[in-house]
Amino acid sequence: MRAGRHYDAIVVGSGISGGWAARELTGHGLGTLVLEAGGPIDPATDFVEHVPPWEKKYRGMGDQKAMDRDHPIQKHCYACDEWSGKFFVNDHENPYTTPDGQPFHWIRGRQVGGRSIMWGRQVYRWSDLDFEANLKDGHGVDWPIRYADIAPWYSYVEKFIGVSGERLGLPQLPDGEFLAPMQFNCVEQMVRDRLAQHYGGERVLTIGRCAILSEDHNGRAACHYCGPCERGCITNSYFNSIGVTLPAARATGRMTLRPWSVVHSVIHDEKRGRAAGVRVIDARTMEPLEFTARLVFLCASALESTRILLNSKSPGFPAGLANSSGQLGRNLMDHTMGGGASGMVPGFEDHWSHGRRPNGIYLPRFRNVTSQHPDFLRGYAYQGGAGRSTWGRGSSMPGFGKDFKHALRTPGPWRFSLYGFGECLPRETNYVELDPVTTDKWGIPALRIHCAWSDNERALLKDASISAAEMLEAAGVRDVRPYVEDNPPGLTIHEMGTARMGRDPKTSVLNGWNQVHDVKNLFVTDGACMASSANQNPSITYMALTARAVSHAVELMKRKEL
Ligand SMILES: Cc1cc2nc3c(=O)[nH]c(=O)nc-3n(C[C@H](O)[C@H](O)[C@H](O)COP(=O)(O)OP(=O)(O)OC[C@H]3O[C@@H](n4cnc5c(N)ncnc54)[C@H](O)[C@@H]3O)c2cc1C
Ligand code: SF4
Image (cartoon, rainbow, N blue to C red):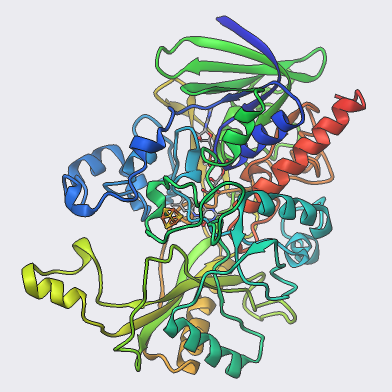
């Protein structure tokens, strides 16, 4: 075992949360080692958002044999295609198991930047409706924080990364520090107006709030609407850690970024009751290494951070470090998705849209906001939008030659769709553990994931479908088709909750500052910390909680309490 240098802080993972931890720790003057399991990314060669399908070997259809071989799980994600497949993990090198008949689609990226490269960039604040939900209906444990605790940190994050959106003044979806909103197209504008007439402000259609620059911001260029952001962005117009937080950390001169460093476990100093550092396996040479630090931040993503802790066994923690409560690995959640409706919108056949707006519409939660629905707890929100239904460059529209070109320039019918995303309740019976047999390429025990939807999630989706159809009918949409998809947990890619926050060390893993109850200098600031799931896309909450946790850790260090 080769011992590496000692640092003020170690951050595990360089994705959305790790990038923020690195920026904040270095910004506070701490020499910080960022350990990333995957390899580096060079935007100049790896980002391919401007590569047209005809320059791809398989014309954008992908090499199906290679996809089946290397990405049998990842291929279920819409973004894992001939361009972006390289940003998704190889499923054979990174295995996990599930019980028969209970699939979980764990979608991951292993590279500097993590999933911040391929993410959908939708960012919504939580409200007290969300932070108080567990206390009110008794599912999970009460959050140890409220909206007022995190609101300034949302602002702090939004101001730095740049979020475009429209202010609505809704209590269930607080406004943020927004850049100018992106524009509706003509059909979305019509649907918005008709919903406003019909529902009088109870149901509001707005443009998506997204971490994409609608104007130049902090030295980064405004988006030029090329469209396929999951392939990268050479102008850094959307937030990812390699273009925004990691460069800021690097500029301090205090960050050491070590790619190809697979963290195996946390070293626990039993005498002092502290994390001493981490054990690492070099991903390319398989050499075991150790690095020590005063502070350790786990930001490897919800399930990977949990796996590291479960694998950090010691005489004092035989069931995994930070697990005196027995809650580590439990209460796994993902959003349920796919209850919705779509239909045709007459009257706009001669209208065009310009550019490829990388954003859709959002219809915030309206269920269980002021009154209780008889069939389910919590709520759902919709994403979606309007588009020319038959128009598609590349593979989606058949044709060839002059007639094809003409068809592409001809206006046509429009379709509008609402696609629901619902809250998942925290349940101890949804959990992960170390698989007794399967290991990954580096010999580290893989996870066994047990996760299933409950009647509440199914009821939410059903209602999302019925309500979507009603709203589209009310807006004058024709040929409305409601649907309820049967997606397995994991596929919404919002997995969270396996090292939850809570006030009581007997029933939770982290305190209200993302600090491990059992080990004071160890912090977990990715989605593992979540005590409930709300229905909003979660990543901006991870960013805000990470920045807040670093500020607290630094304060404790100044007071010599860490
Ligand atoms: C296609 C897609 C669309 C999405 N859309 C949205 C959206 O619109 N809005 C939203 O809020 N969220 C969205 N998400 C989810 C979002 O990407 C995640 O919530 C977010 O990236 C989680 O941040 P993280 O830092 O915890 O993990 P990641 O960003 O996944 O980063 C974790 C990093 O840790 C590294 N790592 C893992 N294990 C180890 C180890 N043992 N040692 C060292 N390093 C390790 C990984 O390689 C990775 O780089 C989307 C995700 C995808 C894939
Ligand atoms: S659409 Fe905008 S944010 Fe997305 S890749 Fe293109 S320029 Fe970047």
